[in-house]
Image (cartoon, rainbow, N blue to C red; front, side, top):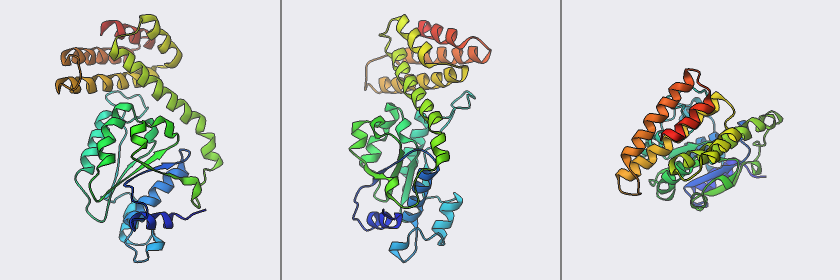
Length: 284
């Protein structure tokens, strides 16, 4: 079993030359603690290389307090609706990438994305250039439960670190109890992304859409979450079409976004969510 101090020393002294790391382990406090300690260790100013993070220097204290300007996390949002379910959206990724491009105030700039394996394909593709060619002083840490949810192109740019191989970062029983809920969220995320593509491609029969909705979207909150994902899909396609990077009409995408907002309002006004989602497919 290794110590995180050794990993920090290997990275800072060049024994591990990667600049993007996937911290692989079950989602929960143990993995979050590992990522936080690794970030603190990379920024630690202790003269003893093998004792970082020291927990006492100004950099370590700022990291522990959440006030370090050199630790940047990709935020999650609920979009325009108050579904209570947060997810990474295209705008969140864009803000994260922009901040990483600005460089550090100190030794390194650390970009953190927890639950990176829940990122949509759109966002993963947006991150590719940053993962491949970050600024010289930038390191990226991704929290990952299932590497198979990452695109092959993303995996090829990462160095994988198993948190369970390091002392003090084994998942607790309490974290294990929460795994069912996390699995359900991951399934909804994957299903919503698939359904969003079905809405945008317009290549599926109505009965296929109906079947996908009935199988995966079980509540009003799920439906509002799905609408956020569908909107992100159309916004990404609209931007790409406007740049000439793909076929399609920006006007048609804009129309679809208007219809999505109408469906969102209908659901908030207590229309049955299945009816609103089915009608949306017909209207766009």
